[in-house]
Image (tube, rainbow, N blue to C red):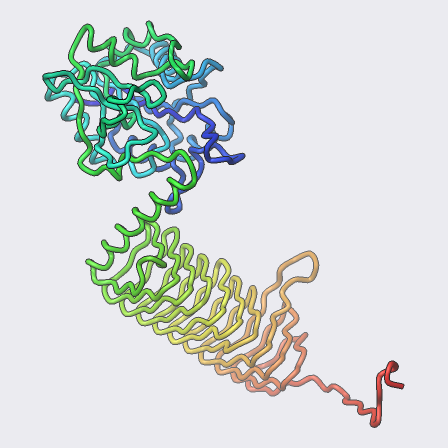
Length: 460
């Protein structure tokens, strides 16, 4: 049965994160908690996807609309609690039209919540004929979670929050994940009678389950993978969850034919693509939508951000961002590739090189200690160490164009805008300010002065 609505609870501050940023906008593996949960819930194609906001409501709302322009934003008032959040949501959704069928409710601080688990929950709910179903998990350490208290028939009797639980209830290891499916009419009725008579003084959504049980059937579906429904309350939990998630990602890629020498120091985000026979050395961070082709070697101690690395290339001890590294290219060590670089096949950017919006032709080498920004270099040229393209005149960024089969001497300075033709040789220490025709030799004449027997003033 299709979802009539999905409600994501994102109103809380998350004080235990100790941050000026709302908890739901913290990230795991490159995506915020809210983005991840919205993507998983949105894949179920609910008729309405609503996000409830309160703390820094404008900031969270802007993020939610960035993830899904069709999202419905619900503003929770100052009355606290998940129950109150759902009351506000149901009132607003009810005003937009009558709700019929299942309504999914999910917390936004479960960054690994996946569509497969949610779909299994909904299928169980409808097949069991439940009026309400809670998604549960069995945890070795249930500290901080509400406990699932079942009756003698295995049905859900109630959910007890940790602060309200007695010793026998605290011993229960089956916990509430804060994900539910309700029949819309049952939910609308159940949330009307909520009160704040509890240790927190809040409107608990869990109390709605007891109301639903009094008039209908309440069931529980246990998530097959406890990691997928684990919540984050503080940075320690976030770190532990990120580490467990990353280990799974590394194991996935190793089974796909990628060599990862040290998974404990290799971090790979979800949207990264790796081919067979890629080698990742220790200390690598692969972020965004980076793509690495077969036989490429990345690392050690290398960061790729939305980068593309072609077959056979090596990137060592470098940072490459939004750049394309051609086949059999050699990058690093200690190279910084800023946005917009395009390096051809067999190119080289050696030690302590920085590039930005540079197009480097096949076989061209920039060996070391150079800056190439806003520049186009042809094929099979060689740039001497210590060369700089001076691209900024104080107002505009200007381009440098250097042709093919050019030999650039050490310590050159190209003052953009400037164009150098094919087959040119430049002398060491040259300052190139004007266009140089093909097949020329260019140098800057600098007079050398020697003062013999000179001593600094303090010696004299």
